Image 1: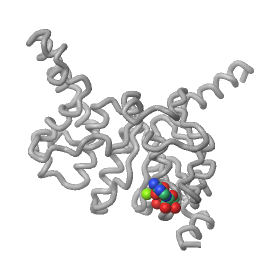
Image 2 (image 1 turned 30 degrees about the horizontal axis):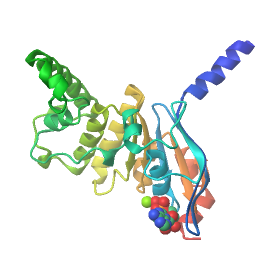
Image 3 (image 1 turned 90 degrees about the vertical axis):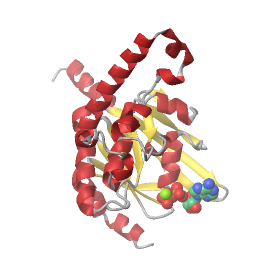
Image 4 (image 1 turned 135 degrees about the horizontal axis):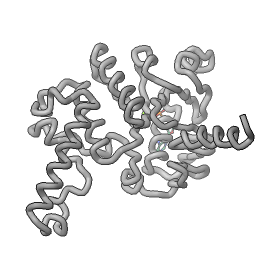
Length: 267
Ligand SMILES: Nc1ncnc2c1ncn2[C@@H]1O[C@H](COP(=O)(O)OP(=O)(O)O)[C@@H](O)[C@H]1O
Ligand SMILES: [Mg+2]
């Protein structure tokens, strides 16, 4: 390979990183919740974050999504330093934690719930709404087309006319993802999506997450404890303990790392 070729290969690998944290430090009084945490999320990959209670996982995703400011370090999203950007500005860039999308409306159908998450809904924008009925219909038609295709991606198309109240726990998680994508998410952070979902549906949920990543280039960061069920769907894993990343790599290697096993035994 030529020097130029090698350089562009390096560029391509770098371009693959959607989100990066560099040396994050966060202290709460005397507690060091994050002690120099650097992680990378690659485009179209599912990245898993594990670690025992109190290891710093929630603090890390709070810093990534902008709910708390780090004492040191940076968060870089698509090449831009977003360390000081407020949460809603990050959402506008496509970095979304699913809990930032309001809970589904129980009495609305799946399709209506996805439409309700749409960006720039003219009903909420007096300027657009005032333009013409034609503009409204064009918006609705385009939004509906987009909503149907997103429902197809997450496997909820057969349920488009079902009320949210009639969905299973796993289907509600898929609806959350569909609404995040409708809102413009390209990077989705989920905290324990498998909690309260039965094992068979956990597989269905995660195979949908994986295909959204593979086929649509959506990037996922997932905190999850039921790692036995989901390791086959995960591309890369980070294990934290006491505010530090203690292992990273292929999920099965990380799960079997002696330091990771020991951290779970409360060492
Ligand atoms: N707002 C806060 N004030 C004080 N201490 C906190 C706060 N948030 C987290 N901590 C502490 O920081 C450490 C990491 O917590 P957390 O990020 O919630 O871990 P995890 O999500 O892995 O269980 C714990 O010792 C926790 O008690
Ligand atoms: Mg937590």
